[in-house]
Length: 157
Image (cartoon, rainbow, N blue to C red; front, top):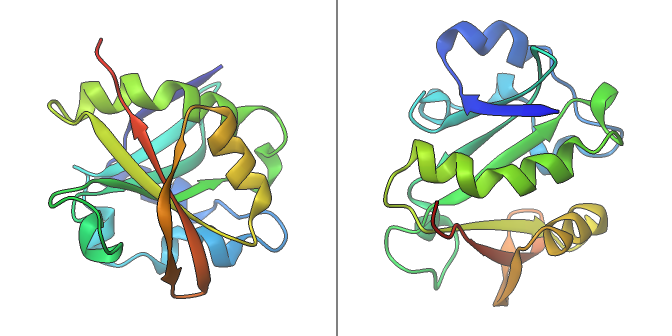
């Protein structure tokens, strides 16, 4: 159904066309607004469906600098965006289910990953809970308000 892979500079034109669903841009942003460092191909990942890019996310290798109380060197999923035209088709679930194997392959040695979700984004929170993410307390005060903190064990191959 979907394919997760590392992104590259060649993907940038397609990534620039992706749009969040109504009311979601403040959660995921737009690729055009990402700083250059966030586009680093070591941490940029794309989501493909039938050979077409339908989403993206990045891995932040310094997630502990963003979220107080996480272990040093914590890696986090950031900027997950599924194009509005592809939402509601199971892609988000497929991404979350395929993420552990994908990250083990792309980031050897990584065994735990984190993410945050705004309190007022219940759809994303339900997706994460349904696909194996575990709430990690306490929540923290994000830039747009309180955020839940989740972690996911990546397991072994």
